[in-house]
Amino acid sequence: MEVFNKLGLSQPVIQAVSNMGFEDVTPIQDQAIPLVMAGRDIIGQAQTGTGKTAAFGIPMIEKISRDEGVKALVITPTRELAVQVAEEINAIGNIKGIRALPIYGGQDINRQIRALKKRPQIIVGTPGRLMDHMRRRTIRLQQIEIVVLDEADEMLNMGFIEDIETILKEVPRERQTLLFSATMPKPVQDLSRQFMKDPEFIQIKSREVTVPNVEQYYVEVHEKQKFDVLCRILDSQSPELAIIFGRTKRRVDELNEALTKRGYCAEGIHGDLTQGKRDSVMRNFKTGVTEILVATDVAARGLDISDITHIFNFDIPQDPDSYVHRIGRTGRLGKAGVAITFANPREMNQLKLIEQSTKRKILRLSVPTFDQALEGQQQLAVDRLMKVIEEEDIYPYKKLAESMLEEKDSITLLSAALKILTKEPDTTPVKLTEEAPLWQKKSRGFKGGKGKPSWKETKFKGGRGDKRKSKKGWK
Picture: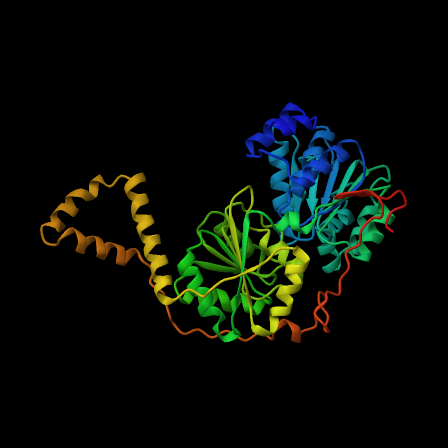
């Protein structure tokens, strides 16, 4: 925790951060925390998985007081992210006595009004529900000292920019504004010019996000063979917790049904689910009841679980930014992770563009054979058996075992036990609706021609390294 001491944090915050298991600062935290503590407006260009919630949450907790009334506002694009951010801020502010309340659509508004009457110091909310409370006058923003716009580019994609402008016009002009975004499209730049004061720009480059704990692979496979190949890999590698990304809601539903049909413990999540169902799916995944989560990009926003071992891009991402967002769900807190992307032969150019953008070689993965898949499941059965021997009380079963050994030899009995424990590869027929290759669809991330990317990263002029500054805003 010595590094957090050097940031000049108070003892209650250092203790809370220590209780959360933080040992070292990430690049975005190292650069952002001192600037926010100094009262500067900042723009942080950083992907999911870089520790940006703590980058604004830690100094926010330090700066605001325990006095009643809302002192800080965090605006997020999705309900899942609002809940996740509020949970992390509450953990940081636990010892100091600072509380954050998530506000989002789909939850009973009267319940939220009752919670607001308890006077939390921080509100974390989605734009639509925040405006609803503003109209009802159940949230008053006159005492706001700090505003955070989290995942601003995603809020742009979801059509929330006008809502954000409306909310910010109701917040005192004498405030500190922090904006975080994976990319910096023009509307986000315009937003910063309109509502921020001489912001300091911090950029965490993609290569710092995609290294070093995520092993990245691709499998070149035709559309009709993708699901069988996925099952082979699942059987051979036996991920503890995995997310499988599909391009459409239909794809997610069909994948979830097909995986369940073949005996995998899977659930799907996308924007059409009710809030109750979404909460149930996420709770099951976080607690390990479900081992595989099938999701669309938007539905997985805000998901922050450190134990995810595998990410599968069943459908290749639309662009490099989406790829980084997806694989950033694994390899967290120093743990190893694996990301495997499926691409059909006509999508290999998109894969090369992702490699160029992330400056990381994606290695080719051979499709496991049936025997390799079976061997993977057999090893998993052995591991489960050994874990029971080492960690659980098996004494009540010894008499039964001794009586069975009078009739059968030990090798036969152990072989039968392993067979029962082993999930043998399942070839139950399934049918998925084919998705057109990405190059046949209109894509905002790529354009045709000679395989060159059509996007341009906007940067500040002047300065060095990852941190750049502009006195006059965007150039």
